[in-house]
Image (cartoon, rainbow, N blue to C red; front, top):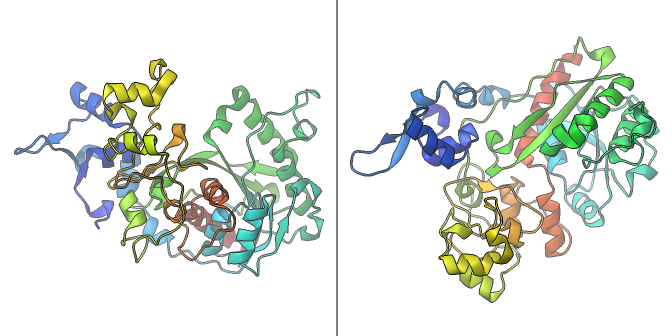
Length: 414
């Protein structure tokens, strides 16, 4: 397979993913002249030349990526990390691959704790509610605190919008642990909605609390997983904080993008990511009538590709509502990244149907799209495993962030 860095022509789908726009937007740009597609002389096949994409920052970053150089990052010493809300280990595994040693990981979900312990028996997994755990024993012994807390509104009863006003939220617990252990830096990941949550008040309060604790917050960034060797259209917001007494020493730079956008084929077939096709594993199935209808949806298609009568039958009352509802009756395509994985692949609003077979993705297919290695085993029922994988940070995205954090922390080593 070719790397984008050594490729001159790109399909409509590839450019849509690269520029983070829809195919419909590209067709509109084609009509109004903003970005004209090249048409093959013998067919209506449309493509774009690399030179046409150079004015776009996203494309320029990929074409001039430092990915290969950054892959050589090595920790100058073992950097110690502590993780909260560890889930099934996507973030922790990526950080481990980058060079971090986890001294403790906290997680509430019993099955996820069992998954962590099964795969890494030497990890110090602390099960239970973070609120009930004292982390003072780790004070000044941690280089990085990491974790993803749910996006929750704060109480504004005190009106000071400080640490006390965050009580009752899991961000408060994250901030409490920052205060208790005083890590050199922290990394928190969250959903895109945090940026504008509660009219922006939530993030402003977080920024103020982080400052009160003696940390500077780097301007938060959305990272699209497809740019970091993950075959999935998933976005996460990352917050990086640096202890103020180290601010002159620690300079953080966001990771460079990979030089190719990977597809579902890269996830499930032998290639760049895996040296064999996806192994068999358990998975859910569709009810008979649902399977009959979905069998008529083409790869890359959704409910609007069905005959009109079947659209009405499948969508019921939603048929007359506004909005694209593009996740419904959705079949994935081999030649594009997967849509964002959810916790339930067979639900009507978030279908992720296999491109060839009329069935939901299996649990191992799910894991591969999240870039877990095949030997990472998940504990629990099929629905629990889907939930653990769907909630995880993609391993390769975490690995890229981990390498960036290692490069930053290497500056503290003589």
